[in-house]
Image 1 (cartoon, one colour):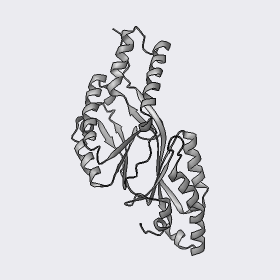
Image 2: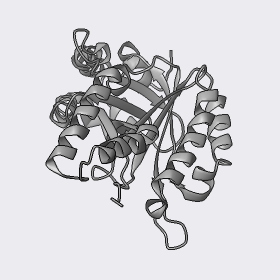
Image 3: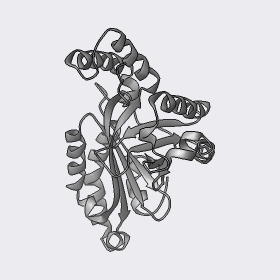
Image 4: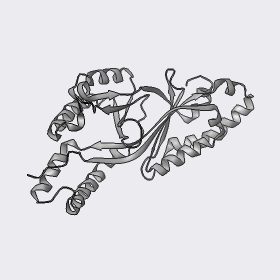
Length: 278
């Protein structure tokens, strides 16, 4: 009997960069008012254009957040079509005089990912029934055809607009690879069952929270990044708390640091630098 692949199919879309900064407030306050105003006036056109994004194709947006807590003061979230475009945005911002007064404290690189646990086993089974050998040229061509078709159908989710929700909660996560509990040795049907049950919890919160999952294996220190967007921050607590009772999280999940931001517009930059919120 042919052994089918253990790796589920995934679809990838926008590349994502999270940037966290601490404002060098003593240096900023030491500037004269006209100097501060000039720096803000230089930064606003670029930040505003990034915030508006691309209205002709994929959104390719940037959002600005005032970060709560000691880990950072400012958080930027960027979505772009390629790593090159992501890096161009990063470098364009770094050329602003404003960035002399922002100290990087953390960043995270990933790509929007949709895991196809529900359909992978079905697709693999159908190809096997057609007599295709896993990883053969014919198999790879058929997989590419399926991925292309599904990517077209899922384009709005793969290349999303940044939700306009008031709050953002971001955190990275892993699946355990320890001796006792190793996600990557669990058979595909069992992983599919666990992920289905896990997903059902998220769907119960779909009317009050938007979730965007990004994959970061090979890009950053964790395996996935999770962005949650909501107008009521208590939803983050309730959703994540409930998910921790779910088997896939309770047994196999590891979580990194959490970052919580309040969405502000580019036009609120002066207030943000002055420690004032709109």
